[in-house]
Image 1 (cartoon, rainbow over the protein chains, first blue to last red):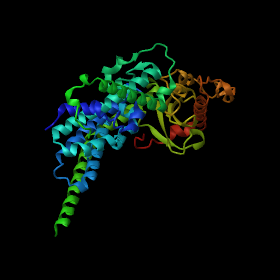
Image 2: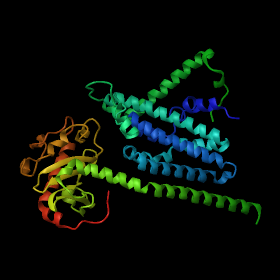
Image 3: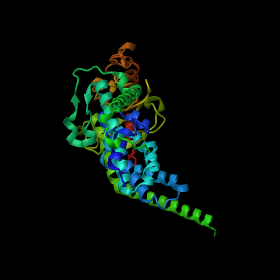
Image 4: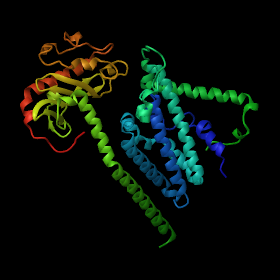
Length: 227
Length: 214
């Protein structure tokens, strides 16, 4: 029995790794100085979540509890290393921008957390979907925070999109505010903390509003405890 | 063998199996991507070299015609610094070297400096730095034109004692809100020129070394 809508809602909103579980904050805060950086790391993290989720779920019946953690570590480390090599081969410029944060995906607790809490207890399709939902939820936070900081920091959006999309991204850069002098705090690390704080606050306000009007809450949102 | 030992042996075997499978996957990916990754690295280096040494100025392979030198005082690092040599018809055209400005506002600034055989700067770019965004990062060619101001300069133009930022009584502008960063870069470029002046003939005469380096 798989509750697909529940899994999607969990990853994207209710139990979002970036806004609710607050996992993987190190890369989240470090690379979100622009939309493109956030999107690049988000997609790499999503790929890792899906691959590790599928693998962990596929072997969940033969791996004994006492060796499950080392096995998870192995699976995640191999997935990340493989993705890193593939990025070096096919997205080298983006890899140079993200630098150390690609291998550091390994330390993103969200991945280990999902392997332990979900993938090791559910069938392969559900685990794959959970990885996808969690990854996209994380990516969404990275992109929104990146947009917030890029816009307030340098007045643009999608700067350097060609790093991610190749020639397709050449003309994508948008100068939203003309002759913008830049707002240094947004680009520096404190801007990441301030921005994330605002996003979490915004989510809580939205949740509180929805909670105050019980009529508007869809039925499936009830009685689904977070893992 | 009792059940506990059997279980432990099975777990150990399983773990070993995962380790072998994982290592195999990574090794396979590495083998499949190695050529491409090396080509990417070469392309990036070649692009950087050609930013500071125009491709039409020379006819040799800049990447291959490479030596390594060590000069902590003038090149800012105790590590060997690669020197790429540009030639045309076998005659020296210039060199490209990658000195370090050790005294940036926020650590080391890695530069790539092209120098023509007569001691004129053919171009300077920043390879990596951690200077403050919005202030010191004006040394990047993408952020401001400041770094282009070195092109065409030499140790006589301006005279050696005026190879400083204006605040220190020299000829080079500082950046708005940042003096330490440009000061470090000006000094590093000047030192690279001095190094080239003092070692010019050996630099071109030394036999090229094997290997790519990064």
